[in-house]
Image (cartoon, rainbow, N blue to C red):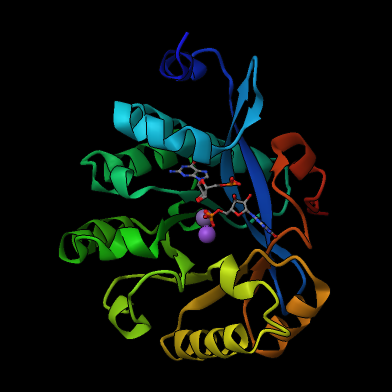
Length: 254
Ligand code: G
Ligand code: G
Ligand code: MN
Ligand code: NA
């Protein structure tokens, strides 16, 4: 009867779902990836977002089976789409700081890739700037292990924490996602424009791919393209969609 009991049963009752949101390359206008975002189709409450149950999952240890489910589902789904000739080079999943500190994460990633027969280069793991910086020294070895398996690493919500890009570059990362609070009105807000301009320039000088998240308006997109931002994600292109709706956006190989 409690939310905890409900969540415990959610996996076995097949109530969890991944929604997918496109990441679009700004040079080619092609979809080059998707972020998998967890949803719970609750029998009474309808579709519930992760912010409402991830904290509970972390407090109760349920985050481990839940994280495993996310990894397995995302890898299997991408393999199914690719096998059907649908063009999607990469799927990104989110890992919380709690999951990141768990011993089993690296093995869980390997198992998910092997189980889905998906090559590691098609998977990207997003971890927030604050989670990386919290216990930075220990995190480097976990990140190295993930990276050496061929999986890409992305720093999520960048610009909200206290790290400098030059410090972050000591970590084996491939991608920076600029937090959507900095992207909002980036075309008109002088402070956001200055910060985003600096982040993109420095990330590029460090050979990192830059993704803008939360792009909602065409002028934001135009400004980001002008700055040379590599990829965009946001409601302007698409909201996160169910697997079925998302599949309809994918091109099919001729
Ligand atoms: O749409 P959105 O409400 O999906 O996501 C809210 C927050 O939940 C984001 O910070 C996102 O990173 C996080 N999130 C989404 N899916 C997952 C997931 O599968 N695992 C973890 N740990 N966090 C997720
Ligand atoms: O993992 P991360 O914290 O980046 O999670 C992305 C979150 O941002 C998800 O909750 C997703 O639903 C949300 N989101 C994606 N695109 C947009 C957007 O254009 N505007 C807003 N406000 N939220 C977005
Ligand atoms: Mn994310
Ligand atoms: Na983010």
